[in-house]
Structures are given as structure tokens and as C-alpha cells.
Image (cartoon, rainbow, N blue to C red; front, side, top):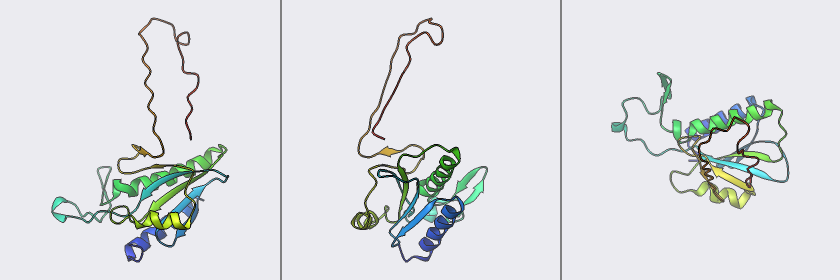
Length: 178
């Protein structure tokens, strides 16, 4: 994949978009692209991938490589898994910068290139680079995600009452490892 001209074009698109959005960009020898904002000793990673499964043209009634937008829907192989999420995250990073909120950690988007086949990309990355301290995998139907290194669900059930707003139970604080 690393030497495929389409992957090279895609990598250059990500580099140009990162530059336009004022995000930092590093290509780890074509295996993984790092896109980040913030600094600090600790880092939080968002893992995604840019490769796709081979196309069975019989299953498509539109050109799977067109990226055409029809009635507000992007038609293209990989638009959901994972090109759309990659671009959404990059714009989200820009929005964080624009918000002026202080970042206590480096927020890094890792874009792998080999998730759909051999997974050599992450093995190579882990030999060359320090992984984020915490990470989540953003895959497919963003923003639904699969958390790695832990998961927590909270359910709160309270009886119905006629207590005026602001006078009943309230959640004071919820913390997580992030």
C-alpha cells in the first residue's frame, strides 16, 4: 500500500489539509500518518485507517471510486470506513484550536494504511514511535467508537417525582481516565 500512487495522493491530501487547518503532520515512512495539536508529556490518540477492502463492482450501483455527493450522501468506497471520520476529526481538531480551550495533552490522530489486510502499519509504527498514552479506535459509523484500554458505562435510574427543576437529584461530577 505504501508505494501505491493512490495512497501517496491520499497522504498528500491529508498533509495539505493538515497544513490548511494549521495541524501538525508527520508521515512515518508511509505506514502511519500522525496529525496532531497540543503539546505535553501525555498524549491521547485517535486511531483510524485509510485503506479499504477490495471492491466487488456487482454490489455497487454508483462508481465506488467517485466520491460523488448525491442527495447529501457521499457515495464512495471508504467514505464511512474511514475517510469521513478522518476528515471529521481533523476539522474537530481545528475547532478545538479555534475554541481557545487549553489542551493539557497532545491530541494525535493516527492514520494507518494497512488495517484491512496485514496490519503491518501499526507493528511498524510501534517499533519506530512511542504510542499515545491512551487511545480510542474511530472506525466506521463515526461518532460511534470502540474504546481501547478500558470501557465504562453508567446507568442512572431515578423514580419519577414532581420535584421542581433544580430541587431534585443532580449529577455533580463524572470522571474518567482521559
